[in-house]
Length: 248
Image (cartoon, rainbow, N blue to C red; front, side):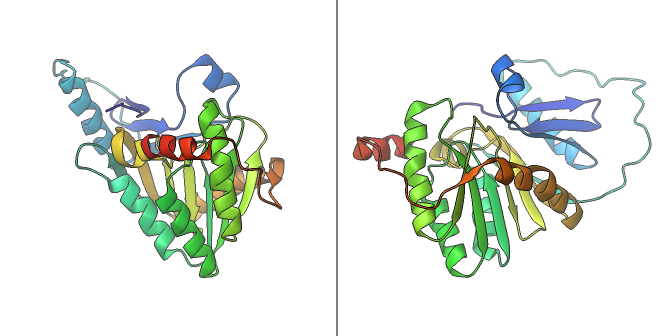
């Protein structure tokens, strides 16, 4: 199992997580997204880190003394940590549930989208009248997945979903639904992240936070991307790509 999580807990008060990886190319050249959170949710991430720390042989550390915890955090959202791990698929379940119950709109952006179950659910949401918009990229860092993304884009487009192609490498892993709920995390919309890797994400319910996410991330990314108006040419070796996606 590949540990694909990105996580830092600072002073037991703030958690940093999301899709950002700490490499030079990711920090300076890729389009990326991460978040900071405070409040009771931080304790869950702290426990997750401690679990992994001990699993790798790290010794328990004494708590930091004299840390200034600052003023109380004013709540602005309901947040829940969701994961993929051994016998845990809460990240997949939360994403599927949100799509199944969306009534108004769904926005999503992801560089590695090969999960056909999610594709079918998005098409079904569109058939219910939901405004579904997907930002994908054909300029990612995995060549085979770039070719597979043409299959995903075509399936979505034929199902009535509006599809945009980001003009560069986007490493954003975010979904928002009906202006109230959002997923932000390390997970891609593929077999590895939804069922096999170790992943962590945040399920957020808040009109204020999700509305800001739509305005500050999705709408600007849609504005710089090219909307598909016709299916893309089918890539060569389609059967091999389909088999590749069963693993990736």
